[in-house]
Length: 129
Image 1 (cartoon, rainbow, N blue to C red):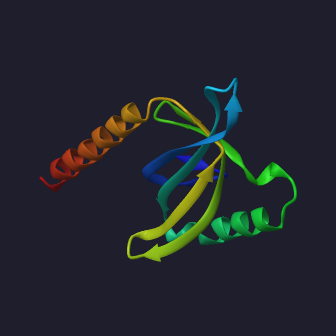
Image 2: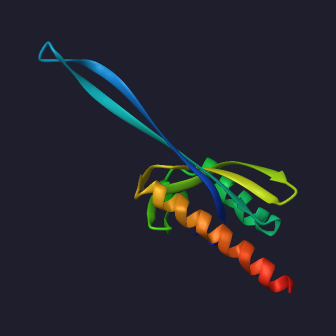
């Protein structure tokens, strides 16, 4: 997935819904507020450190929402993506994103991700011959 000119390999998408009763409605029913928390964990190459650092520092110093981006990845629409943290490991940079809204079938997203990984493994076996 490409966001803000940087290529990312999405590892997981975690969506949590928090339901809060905010008071009574006609004595027997409760009005419910739903808060959605979306966390995306992805990996990028070490060569993208400068662009990623610039994006994070820009988001911390910005008073407008120009640091948020939208993306469509494996038929899932993700709106308001911005990085909140990153760490390094031997494979690259692990980035944690927050998103404002997500629309699409996450099960389909995960199936397509697994199929892509299998295809890459098969191609690597074919290239070894």
